Image (tube, rainbow, N blue to C red):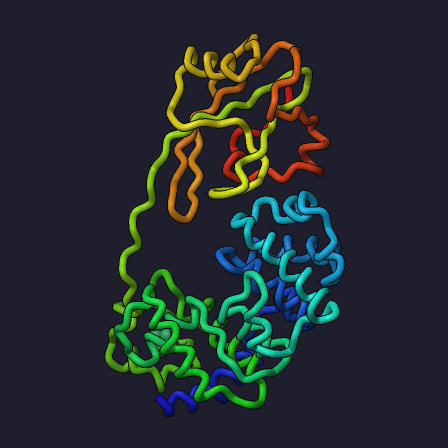
Length: 348
Ligand code: SF4
């Protein structure tokens, strides 16, 4: 594998010319690298740009992140999904305040002790922000390495990642380790792409690529099939009363834990069943209209949703429901994007 060292100067030279101008690259601090890396997990670069700027404006320091009320934090995260990432960020920020005086530790091992930081993120922060020569292996890097070395190991197997980390650790450059890691990721994101054919003719390391030499780039990487997602039918209620919308809090554990939601339940309801469901909540329906069906895909489950907009009588409070006006919904209540299909023009 040591011939892999030959890719280093080629990749760095290519990166210097071709790297994308991304907000988190304009000013590199440990905090900014951390936030961007967490946001970029499971989320496209283009989608993250706006969130990153807004988040940094609202919470510019570790201390601000440690102290922000959870609802405000989740509101800043609204739409990014995987909300545990935001909660872990805050847990880690509190930990950094307590154990490291408010500064991210400049040690790969100590970074690993923080909530939400695994080997990839620790490697990214350590190398990009602190110039520590450790690898940062994500899906992009695994794919590039599999093609470069014509390796048919299953990249869905965690052992493959471990092997890749060990392999890269041996060749990490002492100079510019962060740029080297970013160059590998950038190559995976823009040239040695995941869907469709890689752009080998534009690739700076083509002459060293075993996958290209053997003409098997399209067969790599090998990735075992995931279990198919479970499909769940759900009925979602948009309950309106006096210009306000009903929300409730989800359970503290499980999917979308602790977030606000539109009342919903398993199964696909017709009009009479929707009305009965509203009555069972202790509310009196005045009018029920069907809404467009919607689908939301989580990691392991898909919700196929039927929606009902139900205007209810102004009545006594119902335990577990809060009634919010449009402004409150906009500013105070983080609502997962699973429900957004039911909300346009929602409060009239
Ligand atoms: Fe990927 Fe092609 Fe470059 Fe090999 S030559 S690393 S397959 S883009």
